[in-house]
Amino acid sequence: FTKRKLDDEALEELEETLISADLGVAASQRIVAGFRRTRFGREATDEEIKSALAEEIAAILTPVAQPLEITPGHAPHVVLVVGVNGTGKTTTIAKLSEQYRAQGLKVWMVAGDTFRAAAVEQLQVWGERTGAHVVAPAKHGADAAGLAFDALRDARAAGADVLLVDTAGRLHNKTALMDELRKVVRVLKRHGEAVPHSTLLVLDATTGQNAVSQVRVFKEMVEVTGLVVTKLDGSAKGGVVVALAQEFGLPVHAVGVGEKAADLRPFEARDFARSLVGLD
Amino acid sequence: MFTVFEALGSKLQGVFDRLRGRGALSEADVNDALREVRVALLEADVALPVVKDITAKVRERAVGQEVIRSIQPGQMVVKIVHDALVDALGGKDAAKGIDLAAASPVPILMVGLQGSGKTTTSGKIALRLRGRERKKVLLASLDVHRPAAQLQLETLARQAEVTSLPIIAGQTPLQIAQRAMETARGELYDVVILDTAGRLAIDDALMDEVAAVKAAVKPHETLLVVDAMTGQDAVNTARAFNEKVGVTGIVMTRVDGDARGGAALSMRAVTGAPIKLLGAGEKLDALEDFHPDRIAGRILGM
Ligand SMILES: Nc1nc2c(ncn2[C@@H]2O[C@H](COP(=O)(O)OP(=O)(O)OP(=O)(O)O)[C@@H](O)[C@H]2O)c(=O)[nH]1
Ligand SMILES: Nc1nc2c(ncn2[C@@H]2O[C@H](COP(=O)(O)OP(=O)(O)OP(=O)(O)O)[C@@H](O)[C@H]2O)c(=O)[nH]1
Ligand SMILES: [K+]
Ligand SMILES: [Mg+2]
Ligand SMILES: [Mg+2]
Image (cartoon, rainbow over all chains, first blue to last red; front, side):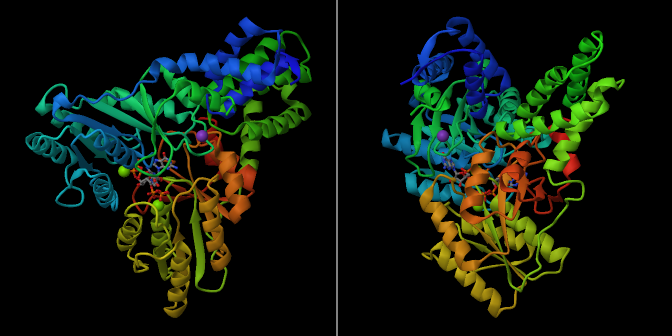
């Protein structure tokens, strides 16, 4: 392995690697600037440089790498799943269901996307496949808040451990749709201030800098408690998560790595960081 | 509050103001301005290699023009950047819709990553072709992977008041495509829109599957559907789909969001294929024509 000096040119290359992984200009510059302070002018192999950079990034991500803890004592623990269109909300619910069912928990789902064509049927298929009971609306376009309220009442009576609430995809800049989502939360809270116990924002790893604006608005509107990043099985690296960790510090609970119910993994800060710099 | 466009303009102006006191500006001074341009484009999610191409072109034009002596060099550079973006997006008169100039039934193949908006866009195009162009349209879902995907397209077809190919469980995507074409020939349809399952560009098995459909059907249009929120990976996706199935046009969805949409530039640069349509909402009538100057302004945060 040839060693090279960590000079301006080498640092610029590192910055470009990070930008190409969607960390954004500001976060990339910040990280490389820290690197410049501590390592400028030293000799190292490419591999050593990248490993060191990955460690630096892993240090930013480690505090947010936290699994989603379900408290069966809530009977049921209510998980509200939100996000913009097509990020993987419904599929993530299927994956969570698979995971909790394997732990022997009794899982209920609510088909809260009463709007999109065949969204209810999509969740019903996942309910069948993962052994979860699905609460579906009586008709297309039914009120999602009322549906969720009734579902929680019935799930409680039935002794469910987890209630996973699917919602329609919505763009964070659409006020009317965000108000609708707030209503779901408000109505659920009639069952108790702590409900929903978790509110997951599902982000697509293919997304660039707009993810920052998604997190900001959803967090403000519905008190997001954690993130799930999907589609990491693709070529996109999801580097915006680093900028998100620095700006919001929200837990990243899990990552989606495929379209099957089994394709959910814990968020591993170190593996994620190494993939961002092109290692592994 | 500044719009980003104003911010870029005033940042650039600031760069030139600082330099002006020193008398004649050099080519190196232009580099300072170009650094601001680079940041603005990257923040809009234009892919890095494409940013480099554009800043190189801007440098060439900026140095050649009277930027240095102009009263508002900042604004002048912004205009040069804007014009370079419009060119890169296909030039002023780029607005090209779907090309139907082929023997009926004209096959249109919809491809793209998971969740990009293919099925919804299929419904939108069907509605537009039936209404505005008075075409007899057949919609067919080749998505045997996603739960209820075929039912989703069938529902949208009903909303658009066009026919969808009857669902036969157990058929492969290739068999469905062939059945769609046979049906369309037999029942004299003008257009057949083939919606496919979402797939990753690095998933060889699924990419081979869609390539086989393409070879059998020979679509007149192969539309790559991409999300306006896409980041740097846009270049990889566009390149892979273009190499595997030959993209003839791009549809960018979710422009009703607040993403700056730099992926449009990346995709266009990599494939050379025109951006044909924009998706601007979840409803079937939310389909718009593409105007390069509007997207250029959006990328610059106008
Ligand atoms: N490759 C891959 N595909 C995924 C992953 N998660 C979800 N998908 C796919 O992404 C597409 C959209 O997933 P959905 O779960 O329907 O997304 P959604 O957020 O519920 O979509 P809307 O309800 O329409 O807003 C589907 O084709 C899924 O199979 C993942 O981790 N990897
Ligand atoms: N706001 C907005 N939402 C859109 C637009 N186009 C599609 N959607 C939504 O995005 C989500 C995914 O759309 P689909 O048409 O199912 O995407 P797809 O590419 O067919 O997904 P897969 O088949 O799973 O790969 C749905 O919630 C759509 O309503 C658009 O232009 N604007
Ligand atoms: K990846
Ligand atoms: Mg959904
Ligand atoms: Mg689809």
